[in-house]
Length: 255
Image (cartoon, rainbow, N blue to C red; front, side, top):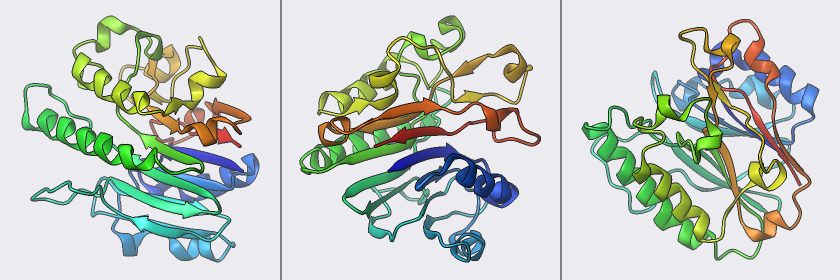
């Protein structure tokens, strides 16, 4: 099965791009982040009429996650357990597809680090860590896919000095990401591409794409059952170079 994850930065702006890419790459299941629309404004019919199943957790104007699949989708949950918030943000969906448990995750950005936004990010990722302790118990493939807004290591950014004080790379955030891995999850990209310096995000500002000033913040974290059957994991840079692209590019994991 060929899985992918893509922060699309507005599905309604880029639904044709997504569909064309799914066909070209022969993707079976796609996790989307930052769909930036309410659930009923998602282009369900556009995908359903072409034979795809959809599961969506939307939000007006920003955030929002979704899953598009060639196979039937069983919704498990559309929020992190035990995560209470005054203003609900659509950032997590968890489904069952065939024998796989799959998520679409859009973790908070957290900047600036001296703000309540950073406190919220810490709280949110701690809740994900807590829930991951139950997910690791499943004796079948579990895939945590999405935009984690975490630069795991120095190798995952074009210049560590630029990012070392950013909420994507400060020690507290990197440690939380490692804590999820220490439960028994593997960074799928690093399983296949040990020392490669590749990016999944290039800012729209400062000519970042043309200068290759990128970072790797979109990830597949997979349990041992998935790691046993992984065939490949790669970042597809090509969509980022198209006209009116998302600032993220898709990542692909094949089992």
